[in-house]
Amino acid sequence: MPRHSLAEFLALPYPILDVRAPIEFAQGHIPGAVSLPLFTDEERARIGTVYKQASQERAVLLGLDFFGPKMSALVKQAQRLAPDRQVRLHCWRGGMRSGAVLWLLELAGFKVHLLDKGYKDYRRAVLAEFEQPRQWRVLGGLTGSGKTDVLHHLADAPGHPVLDLEQLACHKGSSFGAIGQPPQPTQEQFENNLAAALLTLPKGEAIWVEDESRQIGRLTVPARLFEQLQEAPRWLLDVPRAARVAKLAAEYGSQDPALLSEAVERLAKRLGGLATKEALAAIAAGDMARMVEICLDYYDKTYSYGLSRPGMLTRISAASCDPAVNAASLQQLFFAA
Image 1: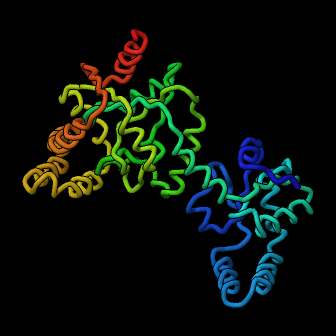
Image 2: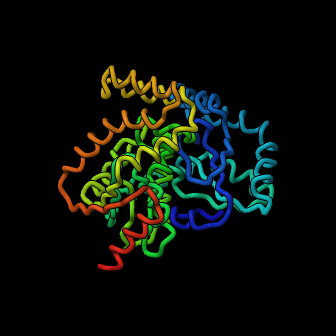
Image 3: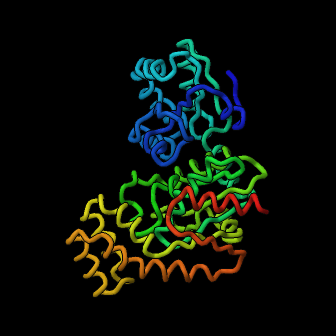
C-alpha cells in the first residue's frame, strides 16, 4: 500500500477518489477528484456524536455497521470509475476512512495509492501557494474595454501566460457579473481551483491578470495574492466610451431582462433614484445602449478613482474593443522593449 507525499500523489495519472462525506466534498475538493463517500452526511454526523459522547470504540463499531452493507456498492462504483483498477485515494487526514476503503479495494484487486495526511495536507499546500512571490502584469481598463478578451488572445501567444480570475470565479466582477455564468464555487473550491491554475503557469515569467477588486461576486481573492496584484505594474486599455457602450449593449442584449433589472436595482443606491428608473425603463423598452450609458456613469467614476493608487501605469490607446488588435498592441510594447 503506497503512501504518497502530496507532490507524488498529484503527479500520478490515476483517478482520485475522495471518500469524505458529500458535504465535505461539496465544500471543497482536489480539482478533478470524484466523490466516493464512505459515509453519508447523516452517518458521519452520528459517528461524530458517538465519538464525542461515548467513546472511539463505539464510534468505530457504528462506522462498521454503516460500512458493511455498502461494501459491494463501493467496489462496483470504483470499478466504473477506474476500470484499470488503479486509483488515488484520500480522506481528511489519511486515517480510518481512507484506510477502510483502501482495505476493501485492495481486497477487490485494486492497486491503491493513498495520500499521506489526506485532504488536510492538500489544503495546507493550497494556502501556501498564494504566499509564493510571482511577477505580475495587470491589465486594466474601464468597464467594457474587452480586457478579458485581450487576455485570451495573449494566452495564445508565447511568453504571455495568463491567469483568468473571472473564469475561475464564474463571475465578471460587477453587479451584472453573474449573468450568463455558471454558479460560483465555494470559497474553498475557488482557492483550490486557483492554486491548481497557478501551478500550471511557467515559473519565472510575468503573468498577465485582469485588474480586479478583491471581491469577485461573493468570492474573495486570497490576501497575499491580492497584495501582489496591487503592487504590480499596470497597463490600461483606453477605449472610447462609444465603443464600450456598443460592446456591452451587444453582450447584454441577449440576456434575460429580469436579470438585468435585478442587477440595476442592486446599484440603486449608487445610481440614484432617477437614474435607476431610467435604466429600468430602458431595459423594458429594449434599449440596451441607454441602460449601459446610465450604468457606465457609475462604473467609470468608480474605476477611475481606483487608478489613483500608486504604481507604474502605462496607457494603451485603442480605437475599438477589438481584442486581437489590442493584444497585438501590448505584444508590440514588449517586443520593442
